[in-house]
Amino acid sequence: MRARRLTGSLAGLIVLSLAAAGCGLSGDSGDGEATAGGCKVDKGNVGSGKLTGDVKGKITFQTTNLKKDFGTFFNGVIKAFEKEHPGTSVKWVDDPGDAKFTERNVADAQACSLPDVINLNKVTATALTKSGYLLNLDEKDPDASKPFVKAFWDSSALKDASGSDVHTVLPWYTGGINLTYNTEMLEKAGIDPEKPPTTLFGLFEDYEKIAKSAKGKYYATMANPIWRLPADWQQMDIKVYSDDGKSFVFADDPRTTEWVAWMTKLYQGGAMPKDSLSSSDDPSTPYSNGQVAYGSTNPSFVRFVKQNSPSVYDKTGVGQYPFDKLGHTTGAPQYISVPATSKNAPTALAFAKFLTNAENQTAWCKDPNVVIFPTTTESLDDPFFTTVTGDDPFAEARKVVAEQLKTATADEVVLSDPQRNAIVAQVQLAMQGKKSPEQAVKDAQDKANELLTQGS
Image 1 (cartoon, rainbow, N blue to C red):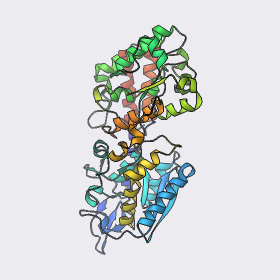
Image 2: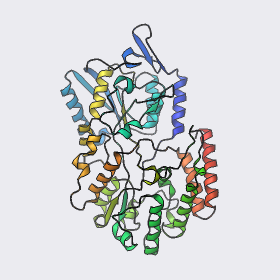
Image 3: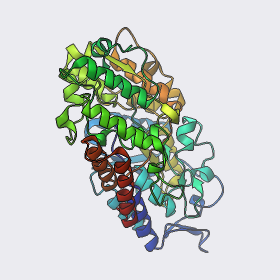
Image 4: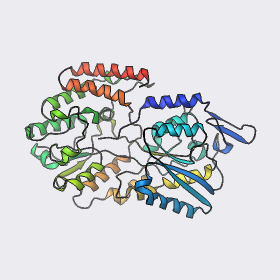
């Protein structure tokens, strides 16, 4: 299971809202100030030239739903920063991260009251960048990229008002993806657990072998395609959107129809429980109960199995999820940014870099209460991620994901919930034999394009 992604059309609506408020960038206002997003700011915060100034004074730091579980860690980071920079004071606030997260931060931006350092998702960061509210790091700190995995940094560029790619965010923590499987079930089907497939269709072939071996006693995986889309298509390098992003084009690739045909074949051939086609349940519980051979692709799932089903954990293997034609994986990192509206940008930027440096990223990722991964090269080379002692699937999962993150990008394909639900519904009809795969793919694209036109 991959993390749910936020909708691109939502970002467009936010940008329109911000634009209507008179957002943008300008230079010197004539009184020693400049503007960013319609807010008066220090002229050093915008335009060309590195950000300069003393690291001192007060700033506000906002995270997203982290204070309850990680108060001790972040208070420690804040104290370490204040000790390293005498005269600084960091006030930590925590947004609940609910459905109104973006709405609140947009309102704060329009009121020129964003915190000095802020934890953002990609949708909100995209909107605030386009409207000129965030510090342009390419201009203000050209060396900001150095700690981060190059592919992650490069793919974290966002569009400004002119349509140019700029870096306004520092990649922070991210998730990962791997194959988790019951080695005993694979071996019974003649599958070598030590040689995971390199393509999605190769994985589907293994699902088919599981079905033939299990004969209805257990299954390969769950049926609902909502857990696989659009991730599978992106991994296959199927072009989902047109170049301008104004229409869906996935039906143009014959492999999309082939993918649906495979899903239909597997479902009807007993590789998936019949009652799981529309179920919202992911493979976590069925895998832990020995009912399916392949578990969730989220690495935190391996820890879940370790804690809740030791007997199944002893049979659990971990492998690389198929890179397929894409050649690498994608992630959806959380970001740290400094608004251009900060009244103490030098201190804010110093703290943002301190928070996201290799030492602090590594330390947080080692916290036993969380399964996350860092975005700095040095962190991914830490023995915590590279060393597996004995037969420990959870440690192996960390190693697999850490290795793949060295080439991963942050440019996951985004579907809105209505768009994804419309596509999934058509695939489900094909899997039930109510439509041909060809017709289902065509209808899926037509319905998704209708929603895209409507801004849904």
